[in-house]
Image 1 (cartoon, rainbow, N blue to C red):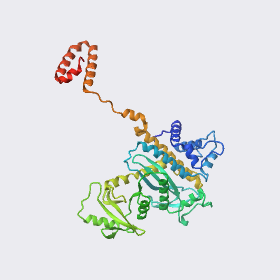
Image 2: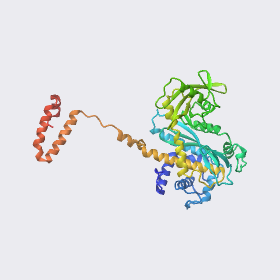
Image 3: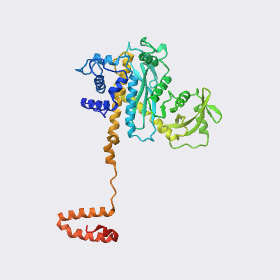
Length: 448
């Protein structure tokens, strides 16, 4: 948040630059957000984003003279608005802009992860459920905010999302609004109660269909199953994830079926030496739907605990173990996004109770982060100056050494004329200097 100070003028300036860059009016129209009467949608969005940056709820935010707060709530609760498409279209525009300043050899990646969207004090929130928090190892009331992000090694941008409820009826607390399953609102609610891994693949499919060129998909152990790797291969994408150390998943190594723990013990008993950045690396195979595929496993020592290890896996066999570790390290950026969104961007701090309105609020949080990411990239990357950067970076023209020496002698002679006491001393120095030069170069200097 230090990128944009808590100043209304700075926020308005950043929003207008962002709006112009991504062609926001056109994108809003494509996401089914249009003006029926009264105020333009861009003004509503500017007010909403300003409210988020100031860390106010809609109830406590300063009123606008152009519209009422009820108009804002109606905009968020509109069942016809495609909030997911809005986030994806904005993300595509920013990726296209950022790629102008990114080396074509840099590996781009999609990142999948989810975070707890708490609603502890809610009673009537639609689709509210008891969801499990893997960090605290307990259930909370709320949702899981499944997020798909994009990163080029420098900038992270949220690209897609799904607000997930629970598939189990016993964990479903909120009411379920009966809507036509063919409508946008109905499809959004049906998606919320499906299996999270299947929805994650749907988000990847939408990103690929929109033209995202990333060839790698990063995820943690919650999504890292052989089926996930196989499904990504069908989409011509390679997954890089951390495997669970479980006995329920078996791989084939040198003709034997074993889990990752057994494989690690075999590698430890072997005479292979460990490396400086990882312990062991091996190629295994697995079967999904009777199709055999190969995968590279990299065993990495857990930081600060030499007797513990992590297991990274990928279907891209040409990657070196150090490259696999480096690529997986990029996944941490989505955790930073969740931290910023929760601490500064009102991630789950809203009084909206309808499911459509919650999706709208989450979309506004992602747009707020997009503005921060854009400001950060433009502040630290001098290439965003455009032609001015290349003009400053253009090398000076080469000149001959005779011309350089002539210019230097004339400049020193000019200084000597201002200080008459130095004239005789400089003449002596020049004479000795010319004697030390080659005769061919002395003739080119002339009378300088």
